Amino acid sequence: MKLQELPDEGPYVSGDSACAGCMASNIAHNVLRILGDRTIASVPPSCMSVFAGTFPNLNWNIPYFHMQFANTAATVTGISRALKAQGKEGIVVLGMAGDGGTGDMGLQSLSGAAQRDENILYICYNNQGYENTGIQASGMTPIGAWSNTTPVRNHNTGNEYYPKDIPRILIAHEATYVATASTADINDFIRKIERAKEIEGFRYIEILSVCTPGWDVKTHLGPQLAREAIDTGFWLLLEYDKRKLTVNHDPKFKGLKEFLKKQGRFKHMTQDQFHIMEEHIRHRYQVAKSLSALDHFL
Ligand SMILES: Cc1ncc(C[n+]2csc(CCOP(=O)(O)OP(=O)(O)O)c2C)c(N)n1
Image 1 (spheres, rainbow, N blue to C red):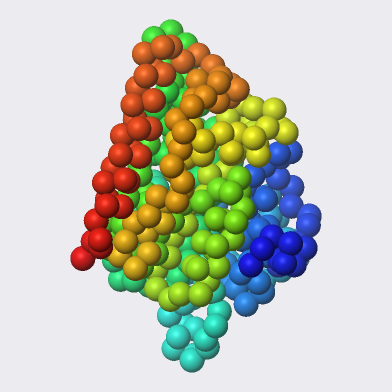
Image 2: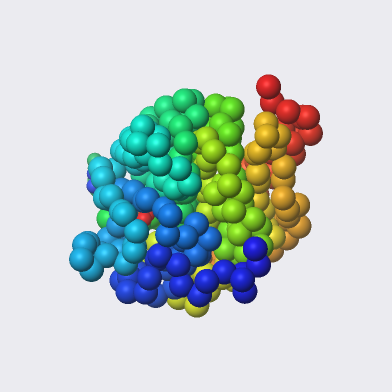
């Protein structure tokens, strides 16, 4: 489907209290425009659960469960199995969590669900930090980034660690469907959500989500940064389907420094740190390209 063909409003109705320029709000809105109202969702503690509100003021106009931080994949697994036991078909069971709830706290339940090929759709909006609780680093925060737990003062120069690559970890489980997406390429985004809606089994989509306070950027800059993230290779568009990995977009690897300098969280970066980041970005791309050269994984 094309963007113009989607309903203006899906089950994610207006009325959330997200920050100005929050991309996670936009992601939820667009995901649910595509999935429609035959969807049951669970969201763990995160920005998304906070700005959605609580019943009866919740802005998810579908059955919605707020569960514990580590439980998203287990919760939606239970819902999916209950529907199966009741003989109910054609309902998407959606787990939607931040990167902390996915790659750190929620990783064990996510891994188990992937291994068992549970019939769930799990979407991670990756804003690259624990943003809801005041901008702490997560396992998916980029190397070099400032956060309140990776400060830039005295001898500290931001986050010391490479971010976890959750799509690659899930592909190693030989999961049914694993993809990354961005609202900056809306056709690719729609195609991937539609594909995930149509198939059964374990499906995971990770979407880059610009966080204006967490990345320390002006509120209007989100769409531009999302586009630059793709062009610089900072965010790769990938798809693992039918046991085959595809790199959907070959980045130009240009303008990385300018892209980083627009974000307060990277403003302090030295030339050495910049090179480490650049090398890491190219390495991830090369790994993805090598894996995509294989006919299939099994
Ligand atoms: C077991 C547990 N530990 C800590 C918390 C506090 N907590 C709530 S939301 C959150 C951060 C969530 O980060 P992430 O999943 O990345 O989502 P975001 O806030 O960035 O949207 C934390 C640490 C909690 N609710 N439960």
